[in-house]
Image: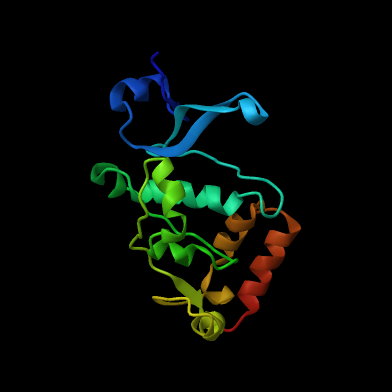
Length: 182
């Protein structure tokens, strides 16, 4: 029996052009329910073209874990694709620093999936005000990041929040910015 892999988000043309190159491994299809469920073909995700991805669910359902899998797959891309990708992750929960270290606590589970624990060369930058709390918790940091609201232009604020330039709030932002001392 031949089991085909699914590559989510890859067009037929790109499938012909790239095959599985530039795709990340998400997991396997599950067929059936309950005790009858079977893992079948691999599910991959296209990582060489832009996509909009929504990961939604209740607290504790695996949203962060799922997004971390996608991030790790970006980091495992072939060099020809990885060198064209940059990523900035805003992590208000403070969990992605753990990507620096191999997940040895789940090594036996990873082996069942023919995976091995890996650590990644990621940089963890934290707001200056949180530096002490990260250090007390033993979380490694590589540096600090801070951005003053005044360092962002009015146009960038308007674009960030998706305002139209003619909306009252956009005009108010412009007026506030003009009146600020430089």
